[in-house]
Length: 123
Image 1 (cartoon, rainbow, N blue to C red):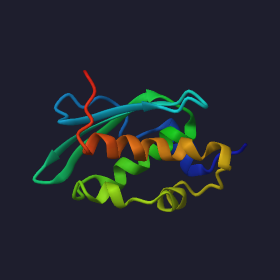
Image 2: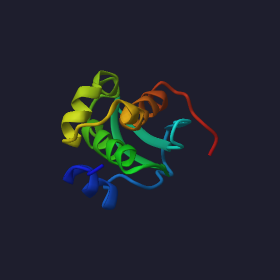
Image 3: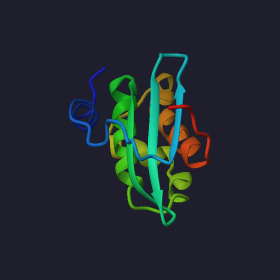
Image 4: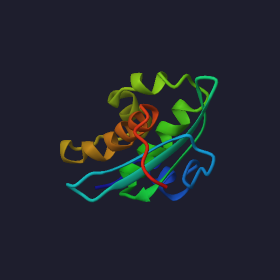
């Protein structure tokens, strides 16, 4: 499978990978089908996503999806994350993703929503 330029670039040079020590929202989950594990940490200020980072072991599609997603929600009201569609993420990835890899795209979205819903995990 050839990845789109966007997926390759975001996987090699992510803008939002790392830890966020001052996070007040965090969540982690795994895709048991392929082993992707993503943790998203956010800082919410005045109802907006003020900062966000992701970490974990994942495939290029999952990492690129997480990176693009965090770029999309940064500065937006926390509720905005609940309205981000899979279709919008797919547009941003500029790739045709097989159904068997769709969970790689959606895992970061569900993890971000979990973090913003207050489903914190231990540090």
